[in-house]
Amino acid sequence: MPPATALRTDSTTRRFVFVLMPEFTLLSFAGALDALRLANRQVGYKAYEWRHIGEGGGTATCSAGSSFQLDGDLDELRHDDTVILCAGTNVTKHTSPKLISWLRREARRGVTIGGLCTAAYALAKAGLLDGKRATIHWENHDGFLEDFPDVDLTKSIYVMDGKIITTAGGTASMDLMLSLIARDQGADVANAVADQQIYTSIRTDRDTQRLSVPTRIGVRHPKLSTVIQKMEAHIEDPISPATLAAEVGLSTRQLERLFRRYLNRSPKRYYMELRLGRARNLLMQTDMNVINVALACGFTSPSHFSKCYRAQYGTTPYRERGSQGASADT
Image (cartoon, rainbow, N blue to C red; front, side, top):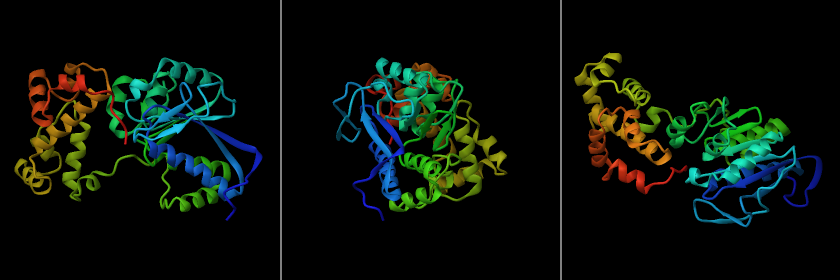
């Protein structure tokens, strides 16, 4: 295998510019960067080079607390650069006017811009995702939909729509980079990089983020899985347990027994926990008022919503909103 050092620079060298926002997710950034390093090692020359920049220059600290020296501020880039915006926790707080202006300027100049993890929020805030397909980490999905209805939000692990790229976070950045490497250098190089990363299954933009319902709940019962999928799809307008049971050919009592046996709770309780979980995400990720959050999660009475929320989380929705910033990624 070619040595990792003394790589020659080729005329086709492609430059990635990683923009590290405060509290960015380390896994997404590291996975993307290391794929480029390994691609260089595999082909034996500097097919890729990279810089790390951020607002103000200096250093950037990831959500795990480790700090990284930056190569510069948000300066003007080359037209053929690829920007990779790395975000993570508290993305709404860290999406500054300066960053938004810089993103808009570079997009107008034709620079390809990608966002890892929660960075889709910053891209959307800059107006770069209007009318485009995009993705974001599943935990931020609900809040994003409320904030940016003009974005065609998917649950794919990554999306490439023209010169705008978004990923779902975590290891999805590796899948994205492997796809770009395959396009630039061929599938054999991308597969060799994946082997070096002990990455046994390269996913595509047709793969979705979350595990299937049976895998997530640890139960492979088709009717139970179908009911849970229906619950997840009808948070704002909940379906009664009797209707859910009838739709999968069960009696209400049979459905109750299934939930008790496999999930140790009633269908009503499970459904309530799903709705309250969605509400908590919206409270932490958006500026929606508490009444609108309640309505979005199927509660017609704010007092009932507050009572249920307190029983689940030990605090009221109003206090949750006051104590939390925007939600994080992995």
